[in-house]
Length: 67
Image 1 (cartoon, helix red, strand yellow):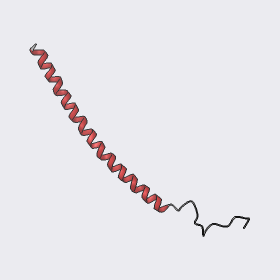
Image 2: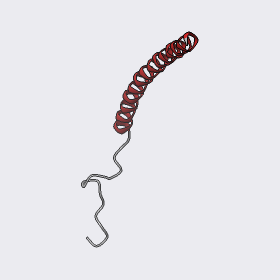
Image 3: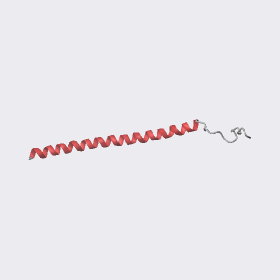
Image 4: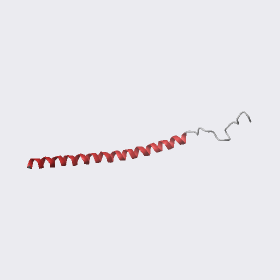
């Protein structure tokens, strides 16, 4: 009986350690994802600022042939 209790306590300790490690990894990944999302938003903002619009303004449009 004593051996079974020691075995269960050992397994519980191992599982707690594993959960702590997994929690640390998840927290680190959450920070990295947040950082990458901010970088992506900034890159998209810069790309939109550099890319000319695909539709010309009314002043730049040539009139259709029937005018």
